[in-house]
Image (cartoon, rainbow, N blue to C red; front, top):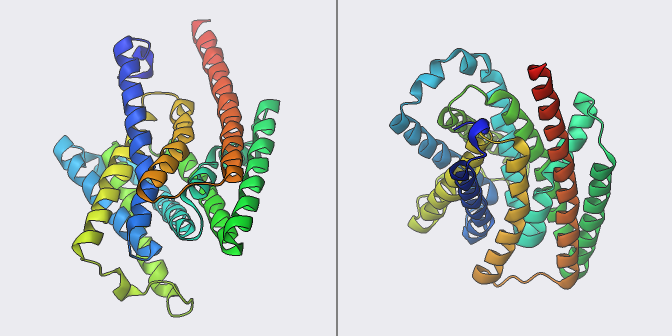
Length: 324
């Protein structure tokens, strides 16, 4: 299926169902992370390692292994390594933030990544942001300040560290998306994801093991040996649900629909994760947290809407050029 036949009811229904699947699966990630008893960095390692194994098995079943020998894969190997490292940094900062602040605050802040994508595009590529995007950015920043103040009042200074790490995770997530949109093209999704997940796992292990002797609280090599049945179930669930059925489905959707359609899914994750946190963790956000939550989502929504309009204008201009 290509973007050209998405106008049919069958094509549109398939995309909607896949978006619903990815959002619901990704929303489960924060809950599973909080349910684990292992250090956050250890959870990052096993999620990425098991995620790589799951996607590799799917690649074998789908006959995609030839993608590892393709010219595109060989030409982009160094970039895939860098994307995998960025993914490790995204996971690490976000997972640690979940230990320090609420699920609602952490998830909505980490999903401000479209704000940073827009800013990076302006700084690095020279794309001018329109008024709607700037209004959205200012709105999202206002909402983040409201949320941070709520965390400071209700939980203390430690929650602010969690908020900061979640925002840092959003920056790395934006870099991850930008890299994926540029260097995943022409590579089977199973090959691309299994590669970057494996790099993320390896980097997480060696980086943490190197820092452990010098930084208190950082897991050392022996801490990564975790085979308790409960923990293994959590790691496998993270690999299958938010990773294979969440992030990997989004990577697939990027090949058949415009990027802004997939990006809009980030608006659903904070809502789903917050509802799941209420049910499974008994974690209910304060009124001010919810107000900041809503303001951030509205701000991100404005930026995504502006990105959608920009991409549609570019597609229309390209179509007009091709017809002339």
